[in-house]
Length: 182
Image 1 (cartoon, rainbow, N blue to C red):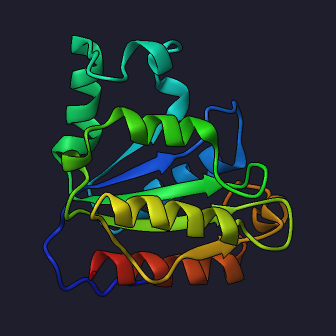
Image 2 (cartoon, one colour):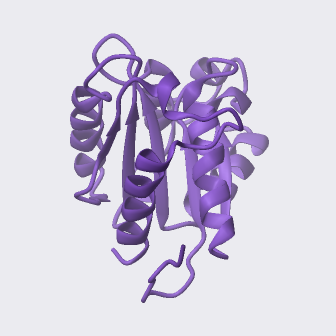
């Protein structure tokens, strides 16, 4: 497959928006990174499992360690395009993602671009969670790409080699192409 991208090759940060080990969100995020890489789009994965275990108390409300500042510079401050893989947690998105967003100064998100992918075991592909997250990102003055992709029945979307089945891959490629031109 070819990717028709008119814009310059900006690096993309792909977030796995849960700290749950072995999650489908992480598998989906890795697959998105591999798709981007196959089209020579520079990218990096940010897995919320890699957050410091105590970041909720140590990195909020003006407290900031040097290590956390380096992490924010590496994955947020120096980038303009983000893909968020959002699993469904209790009808929304994971609290750890909200705490992470709250730990980042709002100006670091301003005028940047976001692409959302919702994943769930159920039938709605985390539509509600993507809507909630869209509201938060828009409050932070981010531009959210219109093609928010819900992936339902996530376990059935992968083949034996942990690649998306053909029909799912097609819509993911369309979303990625559109976002890169956004």
